[in-house]
Amino acid sequence: MTEPAVDSPAPHSSPRGLDLDRLSAYLATHRPELAGGDLSARLIAGGKSNLTYLLRAGGHEVVLRRPPLGHVLATAHDMAREFRVISALAPTGVPVPAALLLCADPDVIGAPFYLMERVHGEVFRTRAQTDPLTADQRRELAMAMMDILAALHTVDPAAVGLADFGRPEGYLARQVRRWSGQLDRSRSRPLSGVDELRDRLAATAPEGANAGRIVHGDYRLDNLLATVAPVGVRAVLDWEMATLGDPLADLGLLLTYWDVLGDSDAAEGNPVADGLGPRAGFPTGAELIDRYAGRSDVDVGPLHWHVALGCFKLAVICEGIHYRHTKGQTLGEGFDRIGDLVTPLVTHGLTAVEKR
Image (cartoon, rainbow, N blue to C red):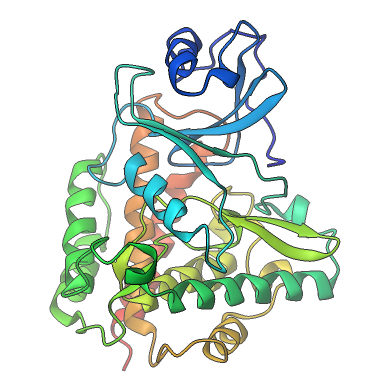
């Protein structure tokens, strides 16, 4: 990863959210090559949900993932789930980091965590990163993103040991209920229109003819590790919301990032969406869907409902991050503006859910 560090502590100085003394003792038994007096860690900037650290010890570098601090939404930060899905996808055409170790015991560092291989590449998240790219590089990167999503949705869950990874039946209605519950746990201020959007989604949830595919749950450009010389995707990251469900949910959320936030003044300079979409010189959302449809057997059909769901889901996620920020439970920069994204998301979601 080439993400900037939030901090770079001296060896055996623990960054917030990580107790290196307890971790070193645990690794002495389970990964002895990483245990020792020279163990150091730094928080990798950029992630707005689970926390990601780069560990160094004895000439080795690995990545540690743990849930966020403080107010954590139930089931949204399941380390075992992330570990299982990247382990299962390792032999497929979907690029993922190698899964190295899972620790379900919260007593070691204060939360469950897992270790994965460090993959070198860049996470393109801001205009400062994407503006120097040529038009061809932006197009190739966007198309590579869609090719990998199509590849993910063609993986047979049973063939990779994920037949029981989720409950495809009623997935979309269950998504509405789940994010409604998460919203209720994150409320800290009035949110105009969000309850109306929730109710309309609940009343119009489709059956989901494509259900039963592996879905990432938060697929977007800045959840990829990529290179530009040559253009390629080295790894797909952040699998905490993966399950078996309707792949159109991935497409709807991607279009929410790309065409909704990517065209919103509130997203400018915001770490959730800055650097994405046509406003940043990338192809349009329609072009992305055409690329996906040409490489997948999924019926893309009308995506308006799934975009509305994506708006609702992302509004709830942003509100949860805003809630944690008000409690001083976020690490890194940019959290003070994430709450500004909720209103444009709700507004667009209400428009999208009414389309026919």
